[in-house]
Amino acid sequence: MFFTAENTLLIGSILLFTSIIVGKTGYRFGVPALLLFLLVGMLFGSDGLGLQFHNAREAQFIGMVALSIILFSGGMDTKFAEIKSVMAPGIVLSTAGVLLTALFTGLFIWYLSGMSWNNIQLPLTTSLLLAATMSSTDSASVFAILRSQKLNLKHHLRPLLELESGSNDPMAYMLTIVLTQVIQSAGMNGAQIAVSFIVQFVVGAAAGYLLGKLAILILNKLDIDNQSLYPIMLLAFVFFTYSATGLVGGNGYLAVYIAGIMVGNYKIIHRKEIFTFMDGMTWLFQIIMFLCLGLLVNPSDLLGVAPVALLIGAFMIVLGRPFSVLLCLVPFGKRFSAKAHIFISWVGLRGAVPIIFATYPVVSGIPGAKDLFNIVFFITILSLVVQGTTVSRMARWLGLSKPMEKEGNEFGVELPDEIDSDLRDVTVTKELLSRGETLKELNLPKGTLVMIVKRGEEYLIPNGTLKLREGDKLLLISEKGKGGTTRKAQLKELRPLSLEELRLPGKEMLTQKIRTPGKDRKRPAGHKENDKGAISGKENAQAAAKDKAPAVHKDKGPAIDTEEHKGAAPVKGNPPAATGKQGVARALPK
Image (tube, rainbow, N blue to C red):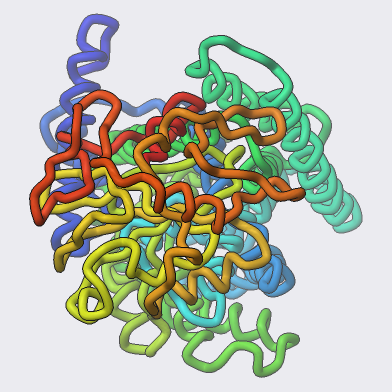
């Protein structure tokens, strides 16, 4: 069956639906979702259910679009504070590491080509070209596996691996293009190749930085009534960055990754909506890309290259990648332990990027390009099966994994960047109740308020007289600043506080305005500001103490005056999300 204008949407929707269901099922067994997407494409392809897709040029274009989005999104999730300490080894791995892997693997492929049993005979330049297409770790696979498995690693290994995978595609891309030109007798001499590499890296990095800053400026300065247009505008910037950088001689993949880092590490308007949109687009194009590549291959063709591909894949996993990592990290001395070397070598995952790069020789008409494509495809499957399914197990076995730091809170409430506050949830325990049963008796640091209490499936708006029960979850809001770290430490070890020390609210808390620079928010009645704009805890506590009447919720009427709900107004359903000016006011019940 061929794709037509009439059946493309029907077939595409079935493929997407099947991929998502299969990916969810495979996640339970630790199978990388990207591998399953690839297998779904093969199942529906020419040797499976009969869908015909053999256009390598179209697959190449789809891969280019998908990689631009994946790299930009990966850059947005990369925190500069985390990669700063591993910048040097990351750059060395993404440049010299790729070059060494291509060199070692290419020489091994050339060595295999001289054996009589091998039905694939490749000259040295073609052997190096095959190795170059597989020389980079796949950003889509590394990002997806490390983040979907919520793997936290010691010694800053996670940001190192993500930095390497996000920035090493340009090197592999340039090696592939240069070697393709050499084979076609349209190549460059050594000096020209060196200059081309330098120009692509320098121009790509500069374009990514400048266009990333431009994107931040436009996002924050351009006032659009419809906030849904902001993510779409950023998506246009992604494609513009890739294309414009290529036009001026830079590497587009490097540019979009650096632009993503810039956007992700600066304050931008509608940040949550933009990140959610880009995350969804990333997964959509990952699925589309792997499905297309699965449809492009004929599984029966893989059998003919299986023996040599298996040997090449084993060499890359066991010798090629580890030896390259070892040489690249030698200048950094004992900064990385032997176990770290082993793990970095093991996460040399291959994925969609090598397959996409393998389409370049096919499109260029390189002799034997079809065999090159099939070998790369086989090695990609081997890498995802062997390495992709054992990443978390290997980290635990080497003692490099550590508990994942908790992100967000169980209430699902988030604050806009404009509000300089932290949200944190605390669960009420027996030990806590032994020190006091009401909010007045808790050890809440100065500058901290209880926004809402979750009891089972019910949400309660508290005041100082609310009687707590074991298992209650408290959502706390505290001011950021120099004392932020101290407050977090205090929240872990609660001690009784006097009423004077608490900032606990009374019933008028939803009626008075808070003023912050350029913004208006709701501020509890009775609050006063000091000369720095901070809330006076003493004034707040006195206002709460004067309030003797039961708390009244604005919409729900008087609070339930029972032992278990005393002093609180019940709120049915989910807590209000603090995602805008009005949302903030609703989400600050005291």
